[in-house]
Structure formats: C-alpha cells, structure tokens
Image (tube, rainbow, N blue to C red; front, side, top):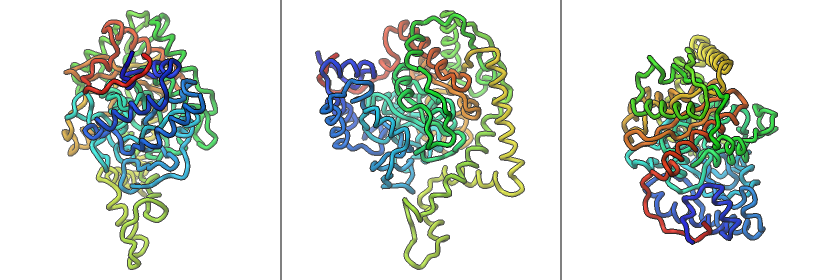
Length: 508
C-alpha cells in the first residue's frame, strides 16, 4: 500500500521505518513537497537537499533508522546556530554567515539521528508576531495564504502545518512558539525557562528566550521536547534537573481521565469582564474546550491574576532593553555584514552604516526603545518598574497554582489576521501576544493545542503549569486533543485544505 509519508505523525514514521521505509525515502518525500510548495508558502530560508539526502542515506547505511528518532526529518528555526549551515536569524546583517559550531539544540537533534531539512523563516532576530519582519521573504499561513502564520516562528509553523516537515524547532520569547502554533493549528510548547539550553540560540532577550517543539500532535511535541531538553553546562541559566517523562505523560493523558485535576480559567485573559479585543469565535471555542476538560473529570474554577493586565507593557520594556545589549555584538567588525569599510571611514562610521543597512525597522525600533529604557535617569522609571511588575506576575502564578493544577486561556485573542493589516500599527501587532506574555515573564511552561475553528481558521487553547511541571501541560493537552479527535473522527490538521501532493511509496 502506498501512502503520502508527509502526512504521517512521528510515531507513524517510526513504524514505517521499521516496516521497510527508508530514511532517504522519507527525506525525499519532504524535500519533494518543499520543492513543489515552498516558493508560494515561504516557510524556509535555506534548504540543502543534497546534504539532507546524504545524511539520511548514512543513517540507512548504519542500520539505525527507526531507532528512536533516527531517520526522522526536522526543520529548525533560523535562530538556532548550526555548524556549516547558513544561519541568519532572519536578518541581512548575518546574510551568508555559516557558524563554526552547533548550538546545543542542534547538536542534540544531530545526536538523536534526525535529518535536517532546512532552516525556517522568522521575524528578524525573533522580533515580531507575524513573520512579516523577516529581511528575506514573507511566510504565508497554509490555512489561508493571505493571512499571517504567526511569529516569530512563522516559518516553522507554516512548514509543519503544510506538510513540509513532520515537526520543527521554534523559539519563544513572548509567545513565538505558542502564537504561531495557535494560528496554524499546531501544538507548540514553551518549556520551563532554563530546561532547554539557550547555548547557540542567537539572543534576543536572554531572560526570556526558550527553544521548544512545534508539532502536529501532542505526542510528537513531547518526543521532540525530550530530545532537546535537559541540563547543559554550556548554558549558565540551564537548570540541573532531568527532563520529565513527557511522552509517557502525553500517552496517559490521551486516555482521557482527568479526575482529580483542577483547572483554573484566567479571568484577565478573556474571562468575564475582560473580553475586549477577543473575538467571540475564539472565546466560544475555548469555552467548549473547557467543557470537554470538565467532562473528563476535571474540576473547573475561575482564577484572578490581576498583574497579568500589565504583562504587555512590562514585556515591551524588558525585552527591548535586553535586545539593545545583545544586538550590540553586530558591529560589522567580527562577522556578518560590513558596509563602508573603504579605508576612508573610521570604525564608528562603518558600524553606523552596517547597522543602518543590516537591521530592519522593527529591530531598530526595539533597540532604540530598549536603549532609552536603560539610559541614565530613566532606568528605574521604566526598566526597574517593569521588573517589579514581572515579580508581581510571578506571584500571581504562585497564588494561582496554590489552588489549581493548571491555568488555561485562549492562546491568542484572535485568529490569524490578514497580511499587512498590522504592519503600520506596532501596538496592535504587539497585542497578538497578549495571552502568551505572562508565562514568558514568569518562566513557567505553557502549551498551545488546537481547540477548533473560527471563521474556518484555527483557534489555540493555552495550558500553563508551574515551573518544571511541563508534564502537566502535555497530559492535559493530550486529553483535550484525544477527546476532540474522537468527536471529529479525524486529526485536527486533516481539516486543512491541502494541495495535491504525489503519493510516495512506503509502508502504511
């Protein structure tokens, strides 16, 4: 029997490999789909078919395909440093740069035997919510090509949703895994801060950045998370704790028994009296998801977290402040773009010309904002106050988790909005991360799982848990996913209108 390998989940691909399919055949299937569809979609910035096929063939030759993750293709956001592979962070200032080493996430994926399909598009230096800030191309949403795929990990979300990768790595600073996952109908998890190494992630905001999985199913996300998580001595913020057993928690959650679990609906994130800016279709799907959790035995109650109302302004002081420091390394001297070095200009002139041409408008906006917030006379009034708000948000989480096991909310206030509709309104663009920012500021884990459609576009349901309780996120998400799939009779992404793709031979 023939099947389109690009439609299979990771456990199904693992089974296919054990049943006669090859890593090279699976890799070619995804590369063929990329070649056929990505020119219009814009999910990838760099694909090297020859290198991917060579890697897959080597895995086949070693006889390891089908063992663990060996032979499974993966896409990686272009913010993850990969040895010898162009890594630009979506910016012209790093165009053509090939790193001399692998970041820890890339190294762990390589060690697990995965096959790198390519590097995915993103908002420049992860600064954006729509992937329209990429210096190279616009990425489109597979559900509606005239709408955004979310951001900054929009390339990863579009690739997985469209079948151009079985799963992908994204990074989340203020919601950049969960928000694009929600808008494209994927599962996206932001791990507990410090539980996945930041070594080799091109830094935006060091106290917030986290890499994590984006996948078609909760189990797929859990398997990818287990592969990249764990302590790393190369990262000073890495937590010295074992990776929770996430895949098994997802499998248990799919059994649908949530007896004894208490779910808290966050009043400030679309709850009663806080619906301004939230689409009614989004709120309706979230309410239906909560009812499903209750039907599986969960106790549901409302929880108030007052400081969450201040997350948006606090984040847009803290993150730009850290960015203004982190991006100072891009000076036109050590690596990347260099402009104006004709022997007649001094270092300051070369640096200014390089940054003028190398950085995009949104990056410049955030550098200026962050530098101002850190400047003498304004530090305590802006950055200092924002850090105090961050503490209040963490306290609200602690108080909430004293009464409930998980907190839930919409992942985004709206479904995917049209391309170009918010590019001239930064405040409206920033509001796309309204629901995801609190968990980022507090460093707690949070997952987005699809919970239905509104206007034929995906709606995301966010589940947040205490620090290092990532397994709780996967358990509840898997229960919800299984209940919805059973009611629908199919997986969520089966509803996505797909282009015809040539079937590729393999074991079904």
